Amino acid sequence: MKLPSGLRLEGTPFDGREFSRLWFVATATYGVGDIVTTIALIGFSEKVREANPLIRAAVDALGNAGLVGLKLAVFLTFILVSVDAAQREDPIFYYLPPIVLTVMGTFTTVYNVRLLMG
Image (tube, rainbow, N blue to C red; front, side, top):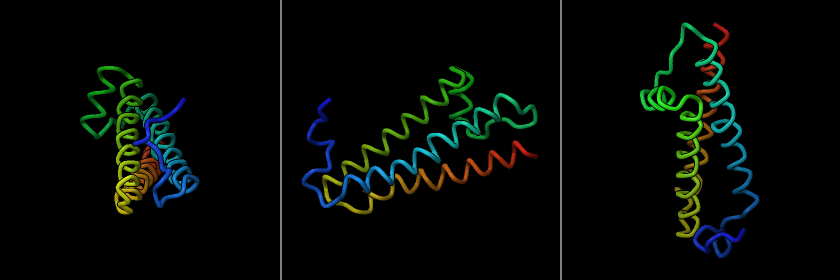
């Protein structure tokens, strides 16, 4: 599959391997850790309910698919922001999206695990 030229890093000062590493960590924390622990909380905890009203509404309407769909939409939006920033040679908005998702994902994963254990 060939990507449109606007979705490539060629011709930018940014390295594709670095991009992959940044987004791998964001995927592991926000994409996997947060989703798995949130599903565990929603499915197995009678004491805890989802605090985020948008996620709660998505789960109420579509179940776990709503949660995953919403997270995927956020994730893809952030990737597009990062790639667009690379095209504009803007290092702040190139690095900021994967860093924000990594921090959010790490925090929510650890918080969810604490809730599961308590």
